[in-house]
Image (cartoon, rainbow, N blue to C red):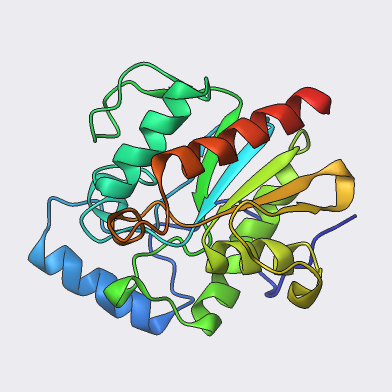
Length: 222
C-alpha cells in the first residue's frame, strides 16, 4: 500500500533546512534565529534508523528542547521521561544527557514528529500538520520493517492515521489503545509525555512504561 502525499514535493523523509511550506512557522523560526543564533532553529530531523521496527511519533519540537538541540525530544522534560523509558525497555543504549552529542543510540527504534518545525505555543495548525505530512508519508514508506507506531498524543495519532489514508473516526485516540494498521503494523496510543500531563497525573510513569512494554510484546509477535 502506498501512502498519499498531500503535495507534489520530492519524496523525502526529512524537511529541508529552510523549508518554506508554512509561512507562520517560517516567521517563528526566523525570530528564534535572531533571538538565539546558537540554537538549531530549523526543521528537526528524525532520530534513528529507517530500518527500525518501532516508530515513536510526537507532536512538534519544543522551543527550548529539540528546536534548541536539533534532536527530537532532546533537552526538555518530555525527553527526560521518554529517553529514560527507552533505556529501561531496551530501545536505547548509552547515556542520555540532553544533547544530540551525548552519544545515546536508539535500538530498533526511530523518533520523529508530526510537525518538524517548532510552532508558537507548541500548537501547530491543522494546515501546518497537513503540509508537513509529506515528510511523514515518505518516512513511513521508507520504513519497510516497521511494525509498531507509538503516537504520543492525539495530534500525532491523527497524523499517523491520515498518512495511512485511514479514517480517524474508525481509529479513535485513547491512551493504551491498539489499532491494527496496513502492512501488519499496529498503532499504540499514549498521552504525550509532557510535564503538564505528568504533573496533573493524566500520565504516570507506570502508564508510560506499559505502552512500551506493549510495543515490545507486539514486536516479538511479528
